[in-house]
Amino acid sequence: MKKILTEIQQNKYFLLFIFLFSYVQTIEIRFQTEREINWYTFTPEAPVLYFVNAGILFLIMRFLMIYWQKSDNFNFKEIFKIFGTSLLLYLVMLNIFKLIIAFVFNTFERNFNSQTFLNNVISDFLNAFIYGSFFLAFYYYRKNQKNQKQIESFNEMLSETKINQLKNQLNPHFLFNNLNILDQLIEEDKTQASDFLNEFADIYRYVLQVSDKKLVEIDEELAFVKKYFKLIQHKYGKSYQLEIKNNQSQGFIVPLSLQLLLENAIQHNLGTETKPVFITIRIDKNLTVSNNIIQKRNTKSPSGKALKNLNEQYFLLTESQIKIQNTNDQFSVTLPIIPGA
Image (cartoon, rainbow, N blue to C red):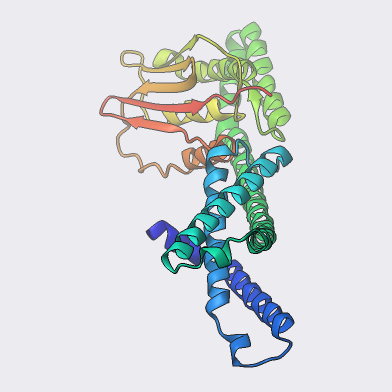
């Protein structure tokens, strides 16, 4: 009941339009029939009846849309099937109700003779066609508005995420640390320093390549993550360890989402050589990144904004949400794998 009231509140202007249209239609029919205007011309019982009948038709159409419509996009065959079936069901229900009323008030002969019945069916069909067309136009207008808002929201959030990711990758602290490592390697091992520099360049090249993409292939993201984790090991050694269990890598994910989850594990956990943080990426039906918890001392409570943004991207792309599990000793985030086109 609460849901119905909410729907009425959200669509009140459309329903008001339907009632006013039915009222004007009634006035026009009465004037054409009687050729005069009097108090009866404006009485509201017929508009109310038209309005109720239209509401029944709308409910039938909405019910069939829920169970038959496979896509949010406009599909002519689906709409034709839903609209035609709705009109048929509506006319059957309406005439059954009229038949019951006719038997109760003993007006069967007057209302169901061949001529009257045919005229009524044609009139009811035309009314249903008009009101049903109004409903379809309004429904897809609202659907288009909703889709446009989702696209705008996604683009806004995606832009914000890109900026944050680039800031995280290019922030002075990150650059300073890695340049220090590079400086040490040049003194100690020029070959290793060269490898480090190439890996460092590949990371930024990848970030720039995917900055305008909504999705990337899992294999592509995994290759990036392996290179990114090598940089982490140059700094932390074996304090953080990564294992990838890849049972199937077909499909797409949001770019840099794995890098974000790795950063999240490193930022909030203190790994050491004796007590390392084990990070596991498992790929099967979904993609899960998990790690054991070794909480840092005197750290600020995480805001969770990065995970919220990631969750919003997945919801807008797949209507599914990421799953976060947080226990005393284990933290994991599961991402839906988006199938290829």
